[in-house]
View (cartoon, rainbow, N blue to C red):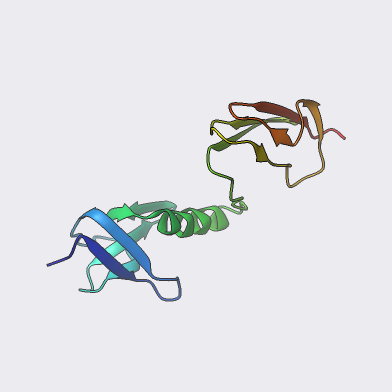
Length: 131
């Protein structure tokens, strides 16, 4: 039986916490990336696809998504709460959906063509990477 807050064993990953619900999986060709304390699969992988058998906390999702990004050759960039980034060609649009001001600058050289790196609540900045 699992509790409302189960822990996953995830060597070499940090411990992950599952709340609200959990599934019991049987592997058929997938690999277990993490297991619950009762040795049932918690996070599985089959090729590029990952499956999470429970409701992870924020830290757990960051671990899972950073691993998926790394496997795909991408770099995961943590963002402040409420910030959304969308890239289209040489342009990056940054939206602040929070009620608080946020400061953010792209990790690659760029110049703002609309707004600045200080985004007000519900603000927008558009960056051009053709410096």
